Image (cartoon, rainbow, N blue to C red):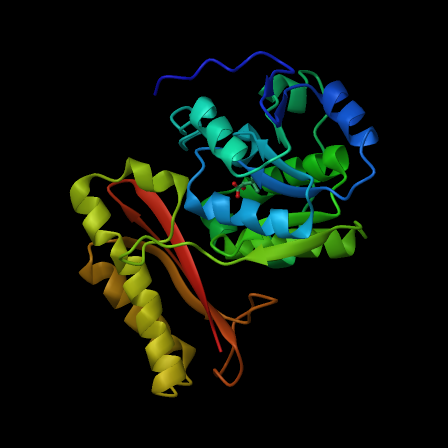
Length: 293
Ligand code: PAF
């Protein structure tokens, strides 16, 4: 895909301040005494991101958005090079949403050549599901999120429930490393047919896009089985979700009913659970989840 040329450093887009270097970001952080509400993103902003920004705006009038396609969280076989980077459209969206600062560093700023990498590991939560299907993914997410926290020193950071496993991994990181940051969980925004908004949805052709609703349908079925029919056996619900994915020609990566905090298997559904699913459609990986009470 064609790469948009990054705007020049330090450019002020009306009220929105675009910062591309770490020294400038540090200076900007030192200059504010107000609490920062951070929304970390990889850009290609959609309504799901705008919901995160809206939530951040409720927490502080100093809303900072990072836009950085983080190479460390992509495996070599993944879509790093074709990941969309519509920076001008993203800046316009941030500006209309009232964002104060966009931090848009280059990969060399975030990972200077020659730097010795650090690894932050949350093995109890990050090994299964996305961790199993995308080896190294969570190490890359934790590393960049820790860097962003350290640079922006936010009081609040907003993350979407859409990436449920990522959310619980980051919550654990913040708790275990005693970071003074309140993580705000923000609900998933969906298309009218129920498909969870994701920057990767734009890879879907018309047929795959129609069938992608199978993920939402599988979660609706899980909710019906558990909340309406009182189904207590996780294996029954998991099988039903898999069948729904397959009926929509989605190649399942996983469909699981788990404890909502530990993500551990449960013997019986007698308390709130989370249903986690992921699958592939014409080579596009999609994931979704539902908390079921
Ligand atoms: O969820 C995302 O967009 C990314 O994983 C994040 C948290 C911005 C880290 O690169």
